[in-house]
Image 1 (tube, rainbow, N blue to C red):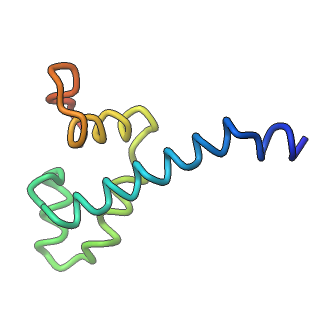
Image 2: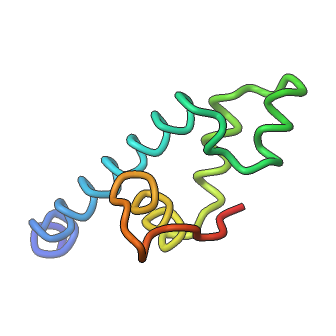
Length: 86
């Protein structure tokens, strides 16, 4: 089971993809706070730990929201613009 399911090439590729997406989002959101939702920015301005707030924000997103946000930031097209992610 471990060899054929949990360590299969398909799972390894998806795990790698998820790690890359999360890493790119973390870096982008740390670099440019304008990309963050208003509530997250406000908490950071009030003294909350920026890294923790970004981590909590990303963790609060669904898989779909994460991939939508990634597409909007890194794969711009008419289909990836303007998703409401708060």
